[in-house]
Structure formats: C-alpha cells, structure tokens
Image (cartoon, rainbow over all chains, first blue to last red; front, top):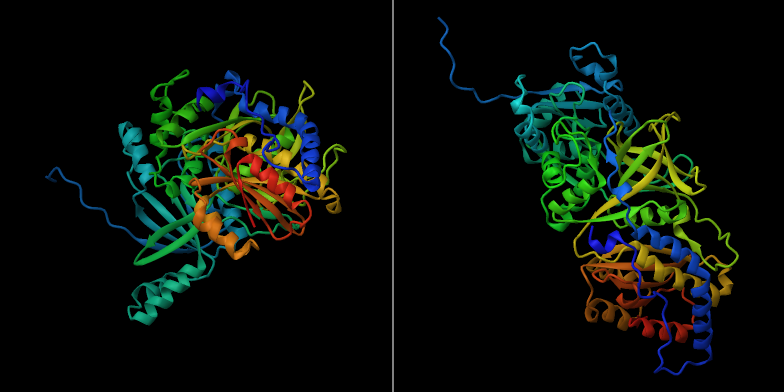
Length: 69
Length: 508
C-alpha cells in the first residue's frame, strides 16, 4: 500500500467528462452532454461514498487475524 | 553388539488404493491426546463431505511425498523440535471412478502404447484432485487442490471461479491435471489463518505473472521481518493486515487495501476483483462476542439476477447487486466454503457487509461474520483501482440510461480487469466492422492489464470503455470506446463526442 492510498485524495481529478470545446456539438450531441451533466449530479452521492474505500485507518490495518481452528 | 548406524537409508514408498469413505478420518490413526476437540479435525470432515459432493469413489495414497510448502515449514520450525518430525508427507489422490489395487496395477503396467494411453485417459477423466497430509497431529491438511462445484446451484444461481488455475500432478508415470485453487489448513506453528489465506490468494496470481509462489514459511518471515506488532513470529500468533501487505510486497506484488464501506460498495469491489481473476483476502470479525479477527480467501462468486434500480434519480442498474454469495478458502473448514452475503446494521446504524458461512451439503450455519476490510494482491503496474474505474463508469452508465429510455433503466454497469491481449483476442465476437477489428487489434496500444467499463442491457453489451490500468485516475486513462452490437444508432455522434473528450478512440 502506498502513502497515497493511506489518505483520501483531496484533489482527485473529476471522472466526469467535459465537452470538447473544439467540436461542434450537433443536436444529438447536445442531448448526450445534457445527460452527462445530469448524471454528474445523480451519481455524486455514490461517488462520494465509494471514495471512502481509498481511506485506510490504523485500526483496520492493525487488526490481528488469527482465528483458531 | 548391534553396530551404531551413522547413515540414513533412502526412503521407499508405497501406493495404496482405498474405497472412498465420506468419514475421511476413519482412514487414519487418532493421534494421542485427551483433547477431543482436536480429532477428528473439522477440515478433514469437511474434505470428506466435499469429496462426497464431487462424487469421489476411490482414494490412491502415495505414502512418501515431498511437499515444497511443508518441507519449508520443517526447515524453519519443526526441525528444531524434540520430536523427529518427518520431512515428508503422504499425498491422497481422489478419483470419481471405483477401482482397487489390482486394477491400479493393470493401469500402471499396461505398457503398450494403446494401453498406456487408455490408462492415462481413464485416470484423467476420473481425477478430482489431491490433498497432501502432513505428519502434524491436529493440523494434517496440507496443500489441497480440488475443483470447485459446477456452474449452477440447486436454486438456479450462477457460480463463477475466475481465480482458479491448472495444477499438474505426477502419479506413478502419469501426468494428471486439475483446475482449482490450492488450499491448506493453518498449522499454528509456522502459519495462521492470514498466512494460508494469503498463500491461496498469491497462488491465484503468481504463476500468470511469472512469479514464484512463496511458501507459508516465506510469508511468515516476510510479514514479520520489519513489522513485529507484538509477540513472536514463531509459533505464529497471526498477522495484521499491515503485515499481510508487507508479505505481498515481498512476493513481488502490490497490496491493494480496501476498507469495507457498506454493503453495495463492498459487493461492487469484490465482484470486480473476483471476476478479474484476483482472489481478495477478507479480514472478517465474527459476530460472536469476544471473537477475534479471521482471514479467508475469496475464490468464487454466487450470483443471481441484477436487482432493479430503486433510486428514482438513477437511470441504470449495478451488476454488483447480483452478487449474493462468495466461495471461500476458510482454513477452519476447507476449500470453496459457501458464504451468503447479507446486510447487517451496526450499532452506529451503518449498513455493513456480513456473511453466513455454511457447510457444502448441509444447511447448518457455522458462523456469522462481518467484513472489516480486504486486501487484494495485484500486479505492481495495476494502479487503477476499482473505485476509480467505477467513478467514471457510474457517470457513463447513468448517461446511457438517460439517452436510451427505451431500455427502461435496465442499462447495467459492471467493471473488471483483463489482460489487454486477451481482450483483443475476443475482438471478432464484438460485432465490430473489419476496420474496427483491425483498429482494436493492430493499431491500439494497450497496457498489460486494461480496466473495462462494461455497459450492457439484459440482451447483451452496448459498449465497453477500455482504461489504461497503469494510470491512477480513470478520467485521463480512457484508451478506447468499443461499440458493441446492441448499441442503438441514435446518439452515436454524442457518444463519439464523449469518447473524444475522454481522449479515447471510438471503435465500431
């Protein structure tokens, strides 16, 4: 486990895609980008919760595993 | 006067054949002692029941077998005991066909080409696997490789065992193979539960990464070399998760530590790693009061149907909701012990992941335990975690669910890792054009492992997004967007634009 994994990333780059400013979005593309924008809001709570899986605590790391037969 | 012998003769060996007996311990001498809880060992009883489920009919016993793992235990620990522990074991081979010693002799001595080939085929077709029995009273079950149960459960659920691999076995002049994942019981001298769980997990990955598999003695030594939390390393008093991470690094792999968050998130993580062929070591705590921590190795999944989406704000389903149970190498029981997953509410109100570990052919609960965390030994260059893969996958799945309302929120998200070369080898069945196949297989540079975000509907796949697993974040790691045959034509331009903004090629 690296140092990076021990603490939650504070400035993690967003996984949400953003429109390519160079491209001309046609009407169909606009629908997709609107959906992306909405999806960003919809999944935000799940993403926030799942990011906790990258935070280790000393208590968990030091749990001794030795169940008897 | 009898002369004093200053030399040891070379050992001889014998091969015995016994009819299978479900009560396996009846084949062996009970070791001396007054503690009835030590004999018969639960693991041996479990093994008998499991073999019975597999349809075992005959046991062939090699009376002298040098086991790499056990002899390392002897060198490190048992050779310094007063009792002269043998440095060899016995090995039991299990067959699903009935035969006796006379038939065995015929199989071995049929020397003509045709007879030898028929004997080989007969034994291979009937071969179920092997178990090394150590001369250790109370903890005899050494390296054991048996196949998992079939793909479908009695209740129609699907089993999958991606971490298993092939083992080659030599018995007399025959080379036999068995597909499974090695299991062994902790001996409490050199190894504890965490040692053997980790050993099984590394067995699943080391060979395909070209690494040697450490023995339990290697694992104990590596774990306690720099990090002795308390007590002594030998006899083993168990390992901490921290020590397991240290042993994984010493084996040439990277320890991916995942704390248990809550039921749905844990299931997503476990399903993704297991369907990628990695075997997570779970740190669990019994719900019985006063029980300590225990480690088991997850080797398979039991899945039902993907559950419908219950959150009205979301437009997709999560494949992880199909995960209903795990199959564990639990050194208190045996290989492929069934564990049903369920939600458990802690005193603080958190929804945790709990499991009910059961016997293979009975509905008797053995233990209820809550998952504390898990560690996955992965190749060092696999840096992209499931968490980060899912972060992008959640966005893409919800987007797809919105732009294709005709699928009525059945768009499903799943993630996994696969070797890039293997993904490319499957390109011809993706429904791609000739140009698409050529671009995917010849023009796209892939990392050794790629992360795959799979967006599907019940009828089949819509698209995959391939991620460079050597990156740490998913967003700049997208390599390609693979159009699969069920993706509707509408909004394709939008998806191309989305792929372009991710820096991924759109391959169709």
